[in-house]
Image (cartoon, rainbow, N blue to C red):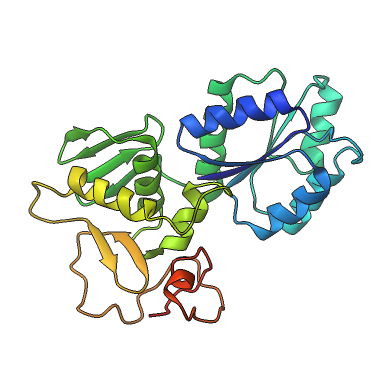
Amino acid sequence: MRVLVIDGDDDVARFIAQGLRQEAYAVDVLRDGAAAGEQARAIDYDVVILDPTLPGHPRFDLLREIRRRKPSLPIVMVSAAASIDERIAGLDAGADDYMVKPVALGELLARLRALLRRGARLDPVLRVADLEIDTVRRTVRRAGVAIDLRPKEYAVLEFLMRNGDRPVPRALIVEHVWDLHFDSISNVVEVQINALRKKLDRGFAVPLIKTVRGVGYMITNVPLPAAPGRLPTVGLLSADCPSSEMERDSPRRTIGCE
């Protein structure tokens, strides 16, 4: 899951970002309110954590701007203002939740999980065939056997499973699992997929992690056809097909290009 943290306090922003990254969230941090609204609009974030008291930005204006541009985007407000009136004003301005600083990381993580479940009406337990993820306890089992995953392996697996039987392009995996500073030319996605195959598929009769050539990856126990054809794909956008190998590996959403 990809999170945008907007906070003018460097120490607080660093604390929140570090805690989220330890839990395998991809995190971008902004301290400038002028750029935050545009970035929240341009990038497909799963949730925004916002302190509305940014220097030079009228209170709640940024919150209202993000809410106007992304009506369904979950927003958690964090603020040192603890009065009931302040909380009511923030929620009425468009926040989905409100936390008073200093923020307890464990509580923030629990609130994020609750918001994400509520926003997409998600079952906290994801299942494909005999593979099961408990997104609250962050545990993985296949055929009842516990499987230990590293944070990024877990993040990639959860993102694939949340998209059901639809191929997920490499670009979207990059966008939701890594932050803006990620080197999109590297083969780290392929490394994570290979690691997951060793842990999840090795020793089982039916492999679940499938490669859809020219599209991306998916989790399914259904055999794929020889050619992908017109499989429904996550994140379709209009784009010109890339002309070089480097462009094909870039995080542009050029889905369906061979």
